[in-house]
Length: 286
Image 1 (cartoon, rainbow, N blue to C red):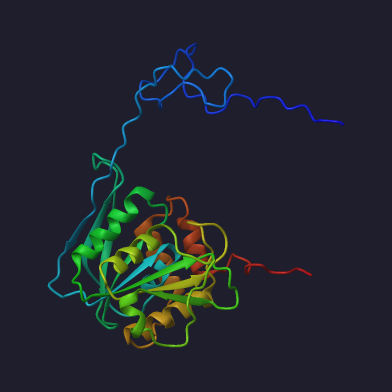
Image 2: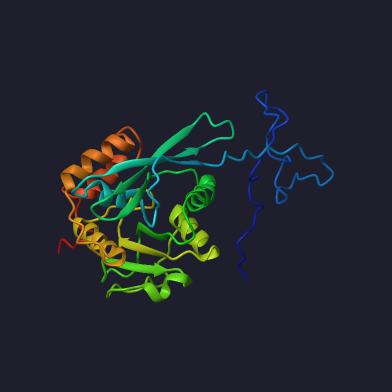
């Protein structure tokens, strides 16, 4: 009987080389992987690298107008509040710290749209995953328990037959209106939008995630123009406002000013907002 010769795999995850001159005192523990033939179980592990926790985000409100309805628009969906016609008032900021010392910080404005009777926060792309939970908690700490939260986010949904789906918390299940279908598995929310909706569920806050169909990869989603309009329509239906009319050219300019074109992924977000340069997802050339 023929048997394929099996050789031990090469050494993997070698974290420390005693012959190297550029050693780091904060390398991870251990020297070799347990599957390495040269692994020594009596070897004293080196100290692990210290875990640094980012500073908690800070929310500052400059207006006495209570936040009754808050729309948190994530990444490409920031085109919705940026493209709204009518006045907007800057009523506060959210400062997100990316490191322990607070040197690397990003400031996110909070806007009030008086003609549509809601507030909005636009979450930029490429947030550090460590700050997602902290940012979600800080936003909910700054509003009242009765505030209705709407999370408008893109998602790589598997159901391509619907442009928009929704996912409410238990407290908001009875408040869902319209004929927008529920988000079904295996489609899911990830990142900041998942952290915020989970926080709302834990705090029994009335929250609804309005999920727009997208393509591409996470943090670089491509969202078609009709999906943006359908998401805005679903948001208007739930907040009880008039139809939210979007001006895409105005939206692109505002996104460029707020997030900066030098930021990786912002160009993708701005382009996908108007979709003039992107082919439709899953297009067939046959």
